[in-house]
Length: 210
Image 1 (cartoon, one colour):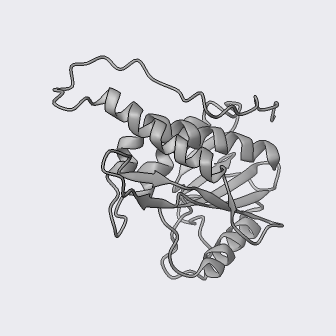
Image 2 (tube, one colour):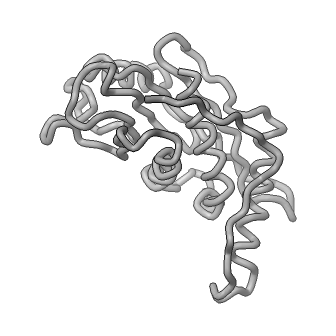
C-alpha cells in the first residue's frame, strides 16, 4: 500500500501546483466540483502507474451495476478507481478513492460505504482523501490553503496528514504563486506558461508496481 500512497501523494502534489486555480475558486460552503478535482488527480496518476491499469472517475461498473453497494439508495459510484475494467479479484482491483474538498457529515458512514464497495468488488485498498481546503485570511497570501489528510482501508480507521502542516502550507503558497505566473493580473491569456514545480517537496521515485 505504501507504493500506492507515494504515487497518490505525488499526483496530489502536482495537482496543487498545476491546478491551483481550481482550488482557489472554492469558498464557503465549498462548492468546487469534486469530480473535476478527482479527474485532475486521476490524470496525474496515469503517469505513476503502468499503462496496464485503468484509472477512471465515477466508473459505473459492469454496465448497469454501479460501484456503489446495492444497499445505497443513490447507488453513487466512487470518485476514482484504479483497476482492470470489468474484472474481479484483488489482482485486478487496486484502489477506490473518495475525494472531499472539506470533510463534512458522518465519516464512519462514508468509510463503511467504501468498505462495502471494496468487499463487493475485491478492491485491495480504499481511501478517503479530504483536501482540507480552508479560506486564507492573509491579504497578500493564497486565497485558499490545502491541508490534505486521508483515511486508508483496511487497517487504518483514522485520518492522517498527507503532508506535514509546514509542507502543506508551503505547497499552497507555491501553487498560488504558480497560478499568478500562469494567469498574470490583467493578462488576456497570451502569455506562455511553461509549467512550474516546487522544490520544497522531494518525493522518492516510486518503485515498479506491475
